[in-house]
Length: 334
Image (cartoon, rainbow, N blue to C red):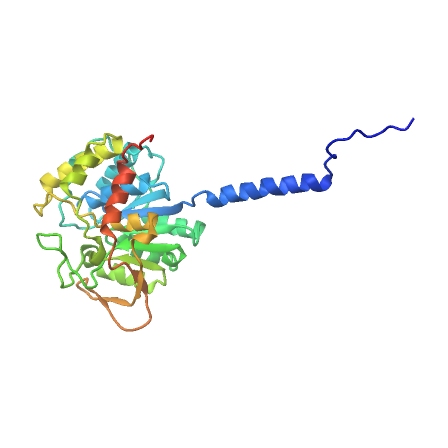
């Protein structure tokens, strides 16, 4: 007797399985495309003198769009800076991030956060920052962004040791220079006259080395970085109560007591390029050709652009990003 197939849904053929597989792969592809791509960053810092470096490091560690893979210390007492950075990384829950130590230099600026840096036992020697930068550029060419927040002695030394090192980074993003506006004198409005900005004036030849290196340079000068962190915002941040914000509060109070400028309100110069890396819509970069003189003045000149510069940041949006990243308010369930 011939069997009769029961009525019902047809059996799936091989093409059905193939379509199902494609659908799964497409869904996985969409999920992968939706996942945020983190920017790998190494930070070169002179943390411990002014307070903006500490805020910049804390923001870079907290923002999910950035991946801090290393920190190098530059300028002045680099060993004490290394101790400070190690303690700040530990307070932020990231003691695994390597800290490499650059060559020490003379430095007339007071190390305002010395007591905090000395508040933990010396963890011993750190790797050489110059060798670290050379090796990182060789091992991951075109991948890592070098965020320079200090006089550029480490960068110049790395380029001298292995020419082509700086060009091998994806970009060198730095707080440096003064194009049209100078330091604000006693207020929030920058001077209409350019200044010899500290990071460049401390080592003008190092900045010239960067410009000559062929690296992709993205510059954040005084024109866009004089962001004042006022008392209302400080109160919200320092009262937030995480180990990271507690560390910033202690560092701020030591800076306020010991800085030689008599300042109470910090200017978050170094935070601005960090914020832009996380949210590039904060500033449109403009191509410029810049020359530097022996005193550290950075002047625009005619000719082919050798860098891109941010000349005006969205200050309100940058302030929001800082607070929402470091001290987010609880979301309403409604």
